[in-house]
Length: 202
Ligand SMILES: C[S@@+](CC[C@H](N)C(=O)[O-])C[C@H]1O[C@@H](n2cnc3c(N)ncnc32)[C@H](O)[C@@H]1O
Image 1: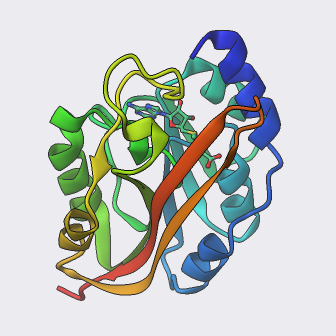
Image 2 (image 1 turned 180 degrees about the vertical axis):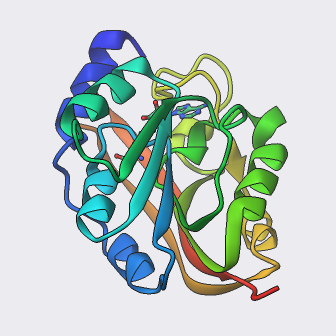
């Protein structure tokens, strides 16, 4: 995606509605309230979490995201921002990890390592709230795919998503499948798994 398209995308999502799954996930967390927002974009979820008493570590591979969030959260001490990729981020211990529509773009070769880092940073009873790309999504079609915003995607079978959560209690698992038009008027098949899960207490 060009830097102009990225800026447009962040403009459109900066004040987007907060998903009910995140409200639920945040409500499940007891002290310490420390969250990581992986691929934080324009900062909609950081804003919600920071206003609800969380210390939030937000990171994103795009400088545009981090610059916007730096302005947005200027002077707010409980928001810590880094420009980083999933693989390079130094994950602090957290009671909540959020990854909304972002792990879609984790390179396949890095996914296992990234997931292991996410698992390890979560405290016992910590909550994961995020989404994964299904194989039937338009973005999962390999080759020079114009609907893919970032260079690589990881698309998973449902069984592969389920396997990620073998040491968790899955609190919510939704499969979203639909066909419609993107804001640019292009037909898109959406196939997304949304998960809220709690890590085991050991
Ligand atoms: C679809 S946007 C979602 C943004 C935000 N989570 C939201 O829900 O508003 C995907 C985000 O993932 C980020 N991203 C893409 N590849 C990444 C990578 N390898 N490491 C970290 N972030 C990445 C993008 O820059 C973008 O901000």
